[in-house]
Image 1: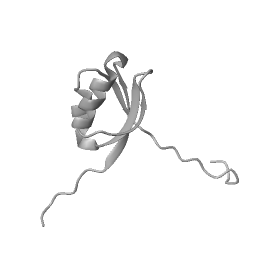
Image 2: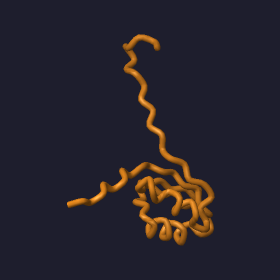
Image 3: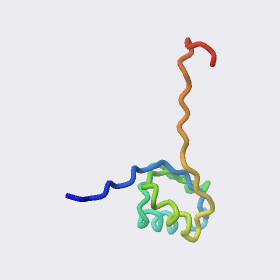
Image 4: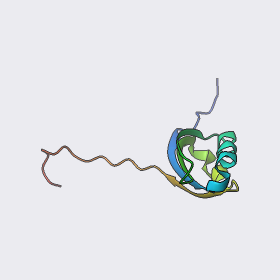
Length: 82
């Protein structure tokens, strides 16, 4: 039982060629992307993927950009100003 742990999935947002949207999304899925949202008219989608698969996604023909999702946590409204 010497299995190496799988990398934790990270959220990503991608811009792809809108004229080839379905084709590019299928290629992204084959490389490990789990799609969580699609906006085909805009040519954007979001999903999760293991961190080590990001370079493979960026290399797919038709991917224009890939950004990691950022989580920003704000303090509660009644907390002191920092």
